[in-house]
Image (cartoon, rainbow, N blue to C red; front, top):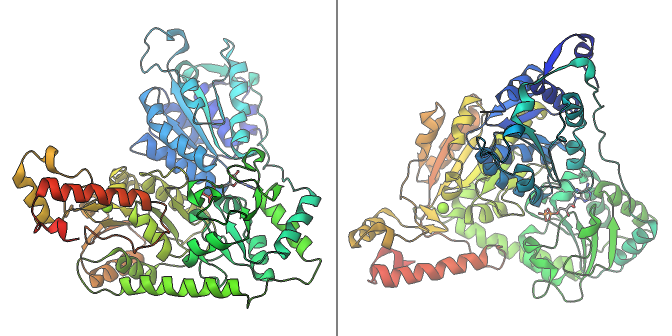
Length: 607
Ligand code: ADP
Ligand code: MG
C-alpha cells in the first residue's frame, strides 16, 4: 500500500535510495542481509528508516545464503544487498544455491554509473548478464533518462512476484550507482500494491482419481516428502494421508519434520530398503535428482510406479516416466488426494509383509548405530557425539547442518519434529551455508517463534567457509549454538602425532594430504574473541555439560568445538549420498599412507 505520509509531502524531493527502500517495504520485505559500500549504503540506511531489518554480514556469499533461507522459511523473499563488481560476484554462489533449491530470493546489486559504462568504471561488470545463469529473472530498471519512470519500474519489483510464483527462485535487480542519490519529486512516483501470495493451483481431477487408484492397488507403497512439501506448508494434509491410510513415508533431508521424524510411519532408518523395494512411490515436492538416486535401478525397482506431485510442469517426467503426474500446489493436491481416497474405506494393511520388512530393517539399522554410539573409546566417534546432542536437543529447535560425515550421520540421528526447521547443504551440496542459514533462522525464530533455538552442526571444514560470521552472530547477539564436529580435516584428518610425523618428511605442501586441516584447532576461540561462550570438549561428559550450559544461557551465542576421532567414518551402508566420494577419499588416503608416510606403523595406516 502507498505510504500516505510519503504521498502527502508532495513538494518533497526523494532520493533513489529512499524509493528503492519504499518499494521493498511495500512488498513486505522484512529482512535485508548485505555488505554496504559504494553505491548501496544509502539504500540500507533508507530501508532501516522504514523499519526493514538490516543485517550486515562479513561476506556477500553468506549474506546471500541467509537471505535465501528467509525465502524458504517465510515464503517471501529475503533481500541480499551487495556492492558492484566483486560484491555481486561473491554473492553468485548464494544465488545459485537459492535457485537450485527452488527458494525465493531477491538480490539487489549496486552497479557502476551508467555514463561510465564501457569506460572501465569502478567495479564495472556485466552484472545483469552474469546473474542470468543463476536466476529466474535478471534485469536493470530500464535505462531511461527520466528517473521517475525508471523508479516506477523499480517500484513494481516484478522480481518479488517472479521469485515466489510458479517454481520459486532467485531474482536480480541491478541498481546503477547514479540512481541511488538522484532526487525526484514524490509527485512523480506511483506505488503498486504488495504482490499477492501465489495463486493456488490444483491437479486435474482425472489424474487425482488415477493416483488414488494406483495407491489403493499398491503392494509396497511409499510416500517421499521433499522440501517442496515443507515450502508449500502441506504438513497437515500429508500427515493426514500418512495416518488415515497407514502409509510409510520417507522424508528427504529438508523434508524432515513435515511429519515428525519420530512418527511410527517414518521409515527413514530403512531408507535404502524402502526406496529399493517400493512398487508405488508418491513424490511430494522432491526431484528425482542425485539425492534420490535419479529414481533409477539398482536403487529402485525397474517398474516402480511414480506419482509425481510438483508445481513445476517442466519437472514432471525428469529421469523417469511417472505413472501419474499431479501438477499443482502440494497442499492443495494432497487435499484432493485425501478427498478421493476418502471415497472408499480403504487403508493400507498395517500388518502387511512390506511393513514387517521395513520395521525389521529399521530395527537392525537403529541397533547398529546405537552400538556405535555406545562406544566408550576416546576420541569420540560421530554417533556418540550425535546421540548426546539428540538427547538434549529441544524438540522445537531449528537444526542447521553441513559437512560431509557430520551432515550425513547427523541427519540420521538428529530428529526434526517441526516443518521448515532443518536447513542444510541441500540440492547443490553447498558447503559454507551453515552460518548464514543459522543467522536467518535466528531472525525468523526471534520474530515468529519466540523461544525456539538454533543449533548449527558444522564439520570443521564446513565451518571454515564462513567462520567470520561468528562476529555477525555476536554483533546481533543471536543465541545460536554452533557445534563444530572437529576431525581435523575434510572427510578425515590426522591426529597430532601423525601430523608431526608427516611434517618431518619435507615441504608440507608436498606431503600434507589435501584433506588435512590443522589438528586440534581451537575454533571455540573465534567465539570467545567476540564475547560469546566457547567450549573445547573431548569427552561425552564435557559435551553434555557444555550443551546443557549453552542451552540454558539464552543471553549469548556459544560454540562447542567437539574433538572426534580424526579417522572416524560412517557405519558401512549404502545410505550415504556421499558414499562414492568417501570411498574415493579412502583410496587417496591409502595412497598417501603408502607413498608418503611409507611405514606400516604410522598412525594413519592403522585405520
Ligand atoms: P528435496 O531436496 O527435498 O528432494 P527438491 O528441491 O528436489 O526437494 O524438490 C522440491 C520440489 O518442490 C521442486 O521440484 C519444486 O518445483 C517443488 N515445489 C516447490 N513449491 C511447491 C508447491 N507449493 N507445490 C508443489 N511443488 C512445489
Ligand atoms: Mg571435518
